[in-house]
Image (cartoon, rainbow, N blue to C red; front, side):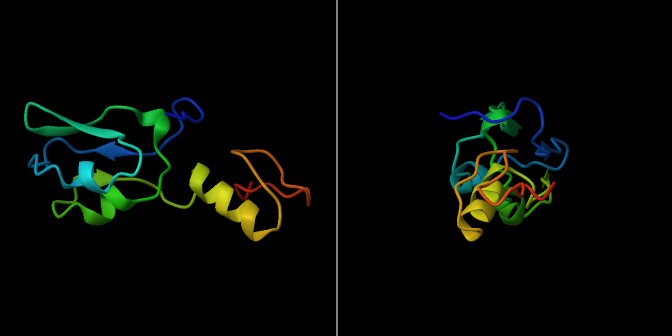
Length: 100
């Protein structure tokens, strides 16, 4: 599993709101979330793409994540600007894929 920059993902789970339905586990493309004692928790935070699938599909508003700032966005911006890009690095046009 690829990991990204340490401790920068904005993913958070409010354990007080989580019902343990496990739907977030099903929609996460990277297996970032797991269940323990019937409550979701962030198991591999540094693998989070910040795509927002977990938060958008949580019926209990227990998950928050700032979308559009993670590695997935960086890669897509790089493709859209005709150049490959990795997290935080400039593409061939000199622009940062992350919008920084």
